Length: 446
Image 1 (cartoon, helix red, strand yellow):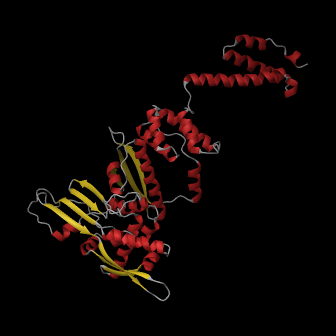
Image 2: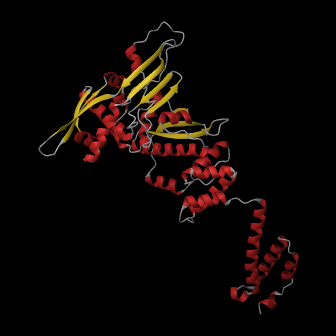
Image 3: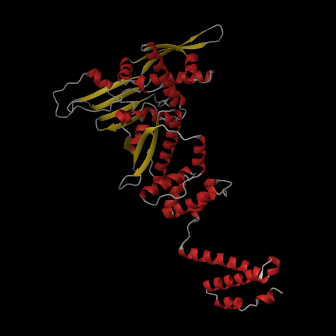
């Protein structure tokens, strides 16, 4: 079940000006899977949404007081379409009770009100396309409706009342769905199973781009955000956080079905800071065992890459581990290098693997980056090395001066004396080295 058409808005070849398209077919080629009629963002209250393509402009208008439909509303519409298809008619007569049962939601007045609101929203939707189809010289403006409805209160014996609804789905709208093979491609029950709105949208959008055995699909991030109805972001870290949301939604979708696995890789677009190329790949589903999944979660990758793709991957990993977009902007403002972030991230993962981080992990990672924990500079390395040598010398000297307490034999004392002398010479303290060289082991062991 695909929504509307699986074909993009493709005009006939420019050289074929003699072709006169069938007006009915023109309407059926409008592709609402590419340009969704609902939003994944529940806070999006925009009543007008438009996307410009090379073929024209797609304009979506909803009731100003209600806003654009969200994932709950698309569930209601899909249910009505599913019932219409099973009844082989564009008129659906049902009750709010039946809709609640079909959507597997609570049976209460709150949900009844929500369903009525959805019907109100879809009744007030208008879609307009203004541009060129098929023939380059022919400019076409087309208008679409979704449905019209009537809601009645009906008294019954067992219930105080029930809300009966009669829905008439626009003929051309329904025909375009049938022509596109909507009911053969998109599984209504799988769509209902997906609770994450972005997972639902990915299920609508991705499969059709892998038709005819295609295994890779590439798209720029800005265009992808338009297609998924996500906000475009100004900062690199914010863009990568959007990818993090997409990846999580993709994981939910992959886990919900046993056919194909979709993966996403992000590469920076040459010459830009906030534009990326998204590579989606489809493979046959080979899910790891539960033990393998636990092991994957337990053993994080400890060494992020250092090339340009690696920088993107590093920021992506930092966002996944709790660093916020605001903190990433702070790092950029304070000129914290990618190398410093990488070293701190490596240090953080090492501590994480050794179970040394007990409390707020994101706060610990933030401190590691800001304070430059991890890989040391050359001066810091020398200073740290001297500190370690001095601590070791202190311990060895204490053992040498108290052989009976530590139970050392004469042979062990001779070996220990050599080690102490060599260590003092190594750090340039020849005076102390000569002092230990001249000490009488027999006298100390009395």
